[in-house]
Amino acid sequence: MRIQTPLARVRYLGSAKEGADHWWWQRLTAILLVPLTLWFVASIWWITVSGASYEAFQDWLSGPVAAILMLLFVGALFYHLKLGLQVVIEDYVHYKPLKWALLISLNLGCLIGALAALYSVVAVALGG
Amino acid sequence: MALRERPLSPHLQVYRPQLTSVLSIFHRLTGVFLASGAAMLVCWLLTAAAGPKYYAWSEWFLTSWLGYALLAAWSYSLFYHLCNGIRHLFWDAGLGFSLRATYASGVLMVLASFGLTGLSWGLGLLFYCTR
Image 1 (cartoon, chains in turn brown, green):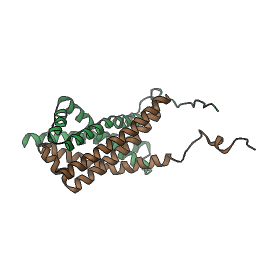
Image 2 (tube, one colour):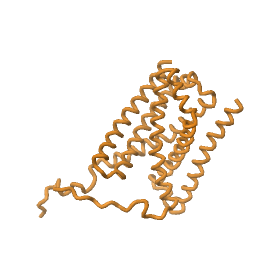
Image 3 (tube, chains in turn green, yellow):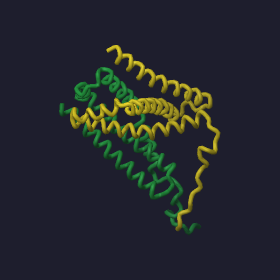
Image 4 (spheres, helix red, strand yellow):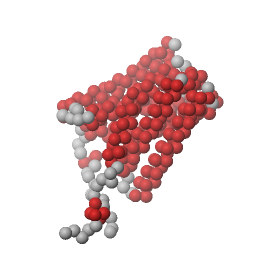
């Protein structure tokens, strides 16, 4: 018979039932980002070679397809970025205060960055 | 109960570099580096939302020599991470796990990443100069 409580037995021994979620969303965003990245690069490429003017950029982002794809791209990108860098920090930073400082900065930074980018896309798309 | 320090597995410097391990660590490096590209993306969109006067700041930075150097590095990193990411997705589906397939897809991925980067910049220059 064990004297340990069930909690003591499982503590530090494995899954907190969140690992699969992390893995799954990293793949989902990756799948989404394959076509979106190609589309983004092609679009930027086209805007650049056709003169790179502010008007050309505004025209492009004012179309509903471009605006929606751009919102999707920014959302998927920042979620993918958050998930990826989180693992890098967890793998290489073992000093706990620094690790937590970096993880908190990463999460807040991605949230703020994504919000700023999403707002900007909507502002340019609707403000033309 | 005091938390015991867990042993860590031996790291990169212990192993002889192989194509597989080198490509893997570069996937991480390009991923981390691309985070700075995401920051640039936010700045670019923010200045665009603020109006033509501020958009000119992004243009000024991106067309400086530092801007072009960063764009070259970002574009290569993006294609590398994209190509190797697709390779990873195949592995996730359980495909291409044999040693031969892993090496073949690795070489193919590197060629594709250089090819796509060269194609983008080459065609871009061609269009730009003949416009």
